[in-house]
Image (cartoon, rainbow, N blue to C red; front, side, top):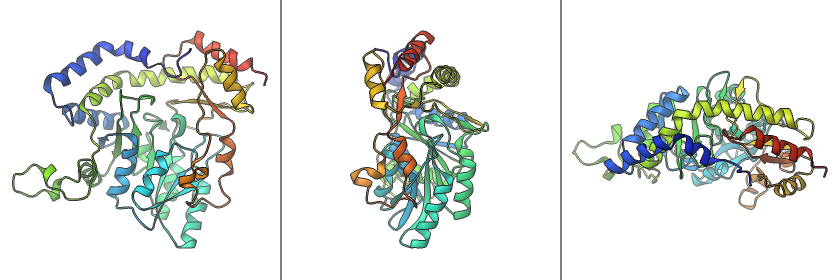
Length: 383
């Protein structure tokens, strides 16, 4: 069986550094929020050109932390795509706010700025909810159209979150999403382009006061900065707000620091893999991926469209080639989310794409001979 994502190949490349990094953590014993966590936060901020980064327990909490810090809640509307993983809309009801589902562009699968504008106008006209924020997803590794999305958000007075869970390291006109967004979030789940060996997440921001509130929230609402009483007590026992437990383990931070040393090279390798796929598959699929003008994708997945997606998946499995389907049922069609608003005219693009997309094996270490085998298998399918 060809690996869908070959974590072992990467591990073999950096194993000496990984072993040494883990040994250092075992030696100093600061297993939660140890020195490697702060070092990683500095490294993540430097990589993306952001003033500040804050790590947390997972990519879902990374989305929840800014919403909570902004005190978004009951009566607020948070606009997001439906063609995404559940984590994107899931965090909104946690705050008491409501997700409003917006359709996607047919070529990049990312949030449609025109439909976002229409959805904001419709919610405003109805008057039941107050438009408060937008969560744009950088799906499959590439940036959403942030110049257009940011213009809409600034004009309408909404906060903008770049959900880069699948796309840490992606750029648009040589800038990372944090250039346009109020915050950019990511996940370090093992399948992501930059991944640890467990769960983890991070938030990038330019706002020092916001960073301080999120730092408080991730540690049970501990006192921070101006909250701190001048009595010498540990601030984690002085609680300024209702918080959560969302700290990154030091071992995971140490692992991520080692992975960052090869991450830029891996992004380059992924470009070569994607280009080889595009050349080999363009004529036998309904569509191969389109990258936004000026964009560089980190290629978390390589997703093609096929009229007989399920038949192709079965055919490839007989040849030892795994596939994945993102996302077979858009969120607005699933029971927990069906009651929430959606933009005018519904979400026809999201529903159509859910019927035809299929992801092929994709990672930085996919050897050309194995990739040629995958391409030949796709081309041989006549269903």
